[in-house]
Image 1 (cartoon, rainbow, N blue to C red):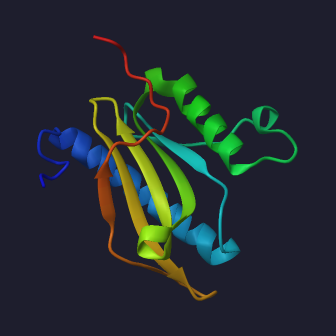
Image 2 (cartoon, helix red, strand yellow; image 1 turned 120 degrees about the vertical axis):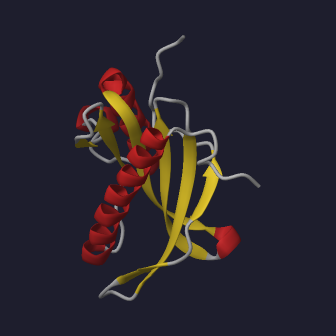
Image 3 (cartoon, rainbow, N blue to C red; image 1 turned 45 degrees about the vertical axis):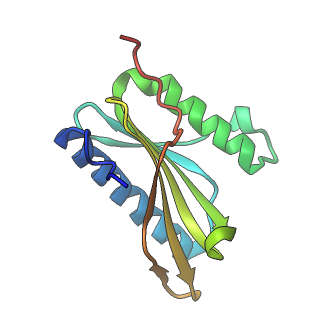
Length: 148
């Protein structure tokens, strides 16, 4: 199996690595503080600046469900796509295939790289321990690319 890095520019690799690290650091803090978190999105602007993209409260309503929050986050990313070089959708999930909770990142870069990353974790109530990262092709953070 080839690595996602093959055929991906060095700039896109660095952007996605930086974005993934920011996402995982924030997820770890939320897991340690609250034990879970609602989905959210993070965008990387063309200049490398990182922006948290929250779901529109009007769109998700007073009693949001996870699917509605995910949809609203993707819509928020789509609305900012012209200014973003990369985006990530971050979710707290359970992965039955590995019998573990995991942070799922759906990463996209404007150059065309789409990835889904699973970072299994355990949380003993005091600290979060991450396991082995699993990377798969495909991912949908909501980033819309300009057509050629």
